[in-house]
Length: 440
Ligand code: B12
Ligand code: SF4
Image (cartoon, rainbow, N blue to C red; front, side):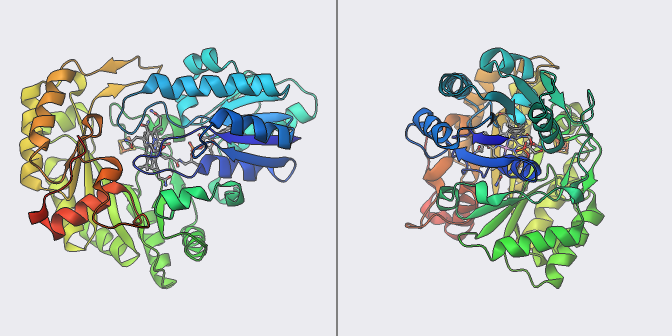
């Protein structure tokens, strides 16, 4: 069968992201099917680009990847979701091919998105085995369920990662590398065993952690380092540093290979020992994004975070000691948290002083748990907005405060490697007397 995979994600903040999911799904289909891809991220007229691709590929199946429901600023959801509705309509008008939708955005809101997009099939969660099974069935003229999920209704179970074909990176649109500072993406494992109260990452990837062979990860990173246009790697694992022995093994493998490519990852303060941070730095890690979430002991407890306040402080100190920049995200106002509680988190952030702190106000959007938005949203945004104005390392995307391309200073010309917050971190530490630009 001829399959056209479509990346509908047009978000370019904090940077454009390669559609790694399409790379993996495309690779899983390739042995038995023809695969092409179109990425709508940089198109002035995405619907026209989509129709052109359909006319040129003449697919039997169109696989639409829906990544985000939210924007980087956590606003404008209707426009993002509405655009996918327009893509689905354009696909139906241009071809009789079956429409299959997958991706994290779809998997988090399958009922609402099915109503909007009216696909022939929806793939929930991990796509490689499920989509390969679905396409094989359709090729054989067999019926298939409306919702396909690995391990359900006869579809093969979750992937053994070391048996997956490497992502088909030839399907990527090279314009990403110009926009995102040459950032490639690598996944070293799937799943997170923690149970933080609001988090949907385990829903998407599972609670059982499935790991890749650390040597294969290091080989992949080495190979990417030598690819044209690649200057940095984002490790897309939900948390890189757990389990620590897997993270350690990858770092050792990179050091043994003399790897020099800078890389970045998500990390949790739980299990972020000094020895591990040292290994990460030696292996090329230049920055970590840490979901600290709250600056009060009760807040951490309410959110069921697997660490304490002093772990956050230790994480910051260790990163600073080993030259890794740290960006901590705080999710304010969840589960009835009041502006007074939020004030205590802000005091805590002042005291710890990470390189960058990003503040968001709680909103939960999974279908299974219902929609929940912070009760004190307006008051909290007002408070954090006022306080952030005078803190050079604080970013509030929803209010446009130190976010997006505005903080990519002072360099001109080619985009620096890494996301905007890294520029902010460097700038505020190196030249604090100049002040930091403020986009809001
Ligand atoms: C790493 C990551 C980032 C990194 C990306 C770095 C990089 N270079 O790639 C950074 C920090 C930049 C980032 C930013 C953002 N992110 Co993000 N990110 C992730 C994370 C942790 C992993 C994504 C990933 O690469 N996974 C690995 C690939 C292989 O998986 P995948 O893309 O999901 O694809 C699989 C399936 O979905 C499926 N599939 C995918 N497409 C298709 C298509 C078809 C046809 C089929 C059948 C199947 C299929 O099969 C694939 C293989 O198994 C996820 C959470 C998670 N654990 O999934 C959030 C996540 C994707 N991000 C999210 C969001 C909201 C954002 C931001 C808007 C928010 C922000 N504050 O910055 C921005 C937007 C950036 C952009 N330009 O789009 C949401 C999206 C859902 C939503 N609620 O909107 C997620 C799910 C997290 C969450 N719940 O909040 N992100
Ligand atoms: S550690 Fe991170 S990925 Fe895992 S459940 Fe908690 S917030 Fe989610």
